[in-house]
Image (tube, rainbow, N blue to C red; front, side, top):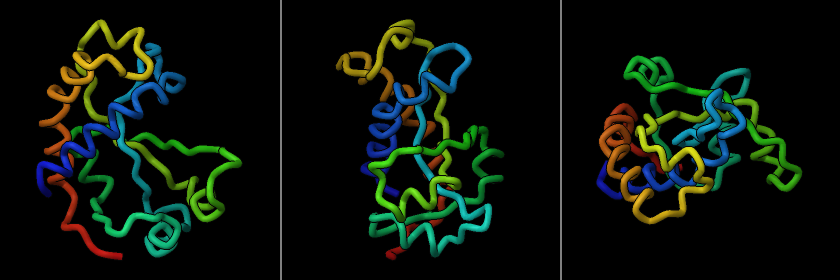
Length: 141
């Protein structure tokens, strides 16, 4: 995966930060990226059919967790979701990247301060690259 993929993961994690304040004990958000898992009777084919992305990559959850990343079960109960995506929400998860110790994150939602966003991106780029290395090659749908 190229540097563009790392930048995409970093930007997604920063964009998602504030969405997870409600699931953390400390009131901070999570720097997390969205994934789906073929589990609970939902197949990889069902997931791929529901999602609009043109390509995908896979990694076993145990490999991701073994590399030190938390995998958190998350789903959205949103009437606005496309029916096909709504149907696969029970197998929606987020992979959590390490949150840098920066006091500015406490009161920030979303991360819209340019300097803070740059500091966070710098801090999570290496973990994002490590995460992407766990996934196999991308496949076209």
